[in-house]
Length: 151
Image (cartoon, rainbow, N blue to C red):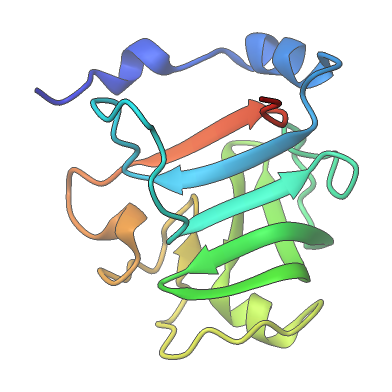
């Protein structure tokens, strides 16, 4: 059974409420989250985690590239921690990053073999089947708002 992802969609108003909660300190993006797995996220390939302190524009349209220090990013198996990554969002498009800008802007994180206009975690003008969020027609990009788990 595949989950009905529309059941998990939240309005911008609800996301804003979650973001403003005292326990919400980070946002993250994953690809193809397995809702059937009791442990949830099993790996950090094609994954992004950012503190709201480092980038507080998660729900805002910036219409410009803005650099942010990410806790961790992994795209197609290439990763870095505490590196500067450029993000962009439009009025009608979710936050995303583009691999050609990652290579030339901010901290200059290099991801080899990028295709023209290859986007990560949203927009997807350039689709690379090596990136699991765009690997096939059933691939999903999943955004999360939350905080640290304290055991």
